[in-house]
Structure formats: C-alpha cells, structure tokens
Length: 223
Image (cartoon, rainbow, N blue to C red):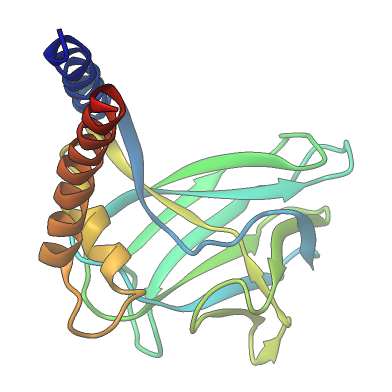
C-alpha cells in the first residue's frame, strides 16, 4: 500500500515533464534576440530628416534575423514614413533595409519591418530615419538598459537606448531553441559555465526534485 502514493507521485512528475515537452514542441517564437530594452518611455524625438542609431549590436550565435520590431509614438497624428537601415558598425555598406509606411497612428505602437535576411558575426548598428514631414517619438529606456550599446543621433549621444527586437521570418518551436537559450543563459555566469553545464543542471533539477519528493513521501508513510 505504501508504494501506491509513491507511484502516484512519480506519475504526476512524469506527466508534468511530458506537458512541458509538449508545450515546448508546440509553442513557437519568431524572436531571434533582443537588446533587453523595455519600451517604457519616448526617449528620442525625431524631426523630419533626423535619424537615430543604436550601436554597436553583436548578434548572438544562431540568431540571424529578417525583421526588426520597435515602438513609435505620434500623439494621435498620422506618423511619417520611417526607413530602417542595418549597417556594419563603423564600416561602409548595408546589411539590410526596410521601410515603415506613413500614416500610422498611436501613442506607443509596436511596428515590425522586414529588412531582409541578416546574418553576421561582426558588430552592426540599426538606424531609424524619419522620412516624412512630421515628428515621431522612438521608445526605449535609460542608457544602461542595453549592454555595450547605446543610441545616438549622428555624433551626439542620446543617453538612452531604443527598444529593438529582432525576429525571424518563420517561427521556431521553443523546444528547438532550448540549446541556444541555455548557451545564452551561460553568458551571464562564470567563464567555465557553458551550455552543457546548464543542460546538466536542468536534468539534475528534473531528476532530483521528484526523487526528493518520493523520499519525503516514503519517510512520511513509514512514520
């Protein structure tokens, strides 16, 4: 009789793991990577002909993108066309380009623009250029929001970061991105901690927690 609660607990744990696997396999993400900047406030007003660039940006491994998302505010008036340019940092040429059509409205609206497929291991910058007659506000946050990157208008720093999200053209399942996510999580740890360590740690949690629960249940039933 003592084994029944133990088996039931193991069954619940296995079911939980199965549910997590199914969710990971069926849920999809377009996001390739982000700068981690929350678009909580309008940080850069752009008049006609002005532009702002966020740089330098380093693409993580396996994070090629096709679209860039950002937040603009127009105070309810029709917004101007915005050119989105991806360029090598401190170098000539273009890596990608797109355009947001004019006449959108909204106080703080998220827009997504196709810029073509971009895959580079070199630092780059993303510039938003006001190609219309009216002012528009670019949303972001304080300059400390993005690591080793900041927004500037030409040579003039804005003391802010603009919120940029880089997306793939097609969605990928969360489960297929697990290795990449663990590798990136390891970047915030000691230098000897890699993706393999994070995988072992996750496996230890999955196996150890049910084992501890089973042991606790056995001790409780024995007493």
